[in-house]
Image (cartoon, rainbow, N blue to C red):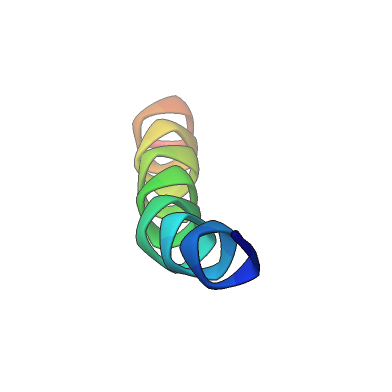
Length: 29
């Protein structure tokens, strides 16, 4: 189960960061 959690985190976290920075870019454009 721990390996699955790590895979999910490694797949999801970059996507969250990408969305976060995209929103920031839109706000401060």
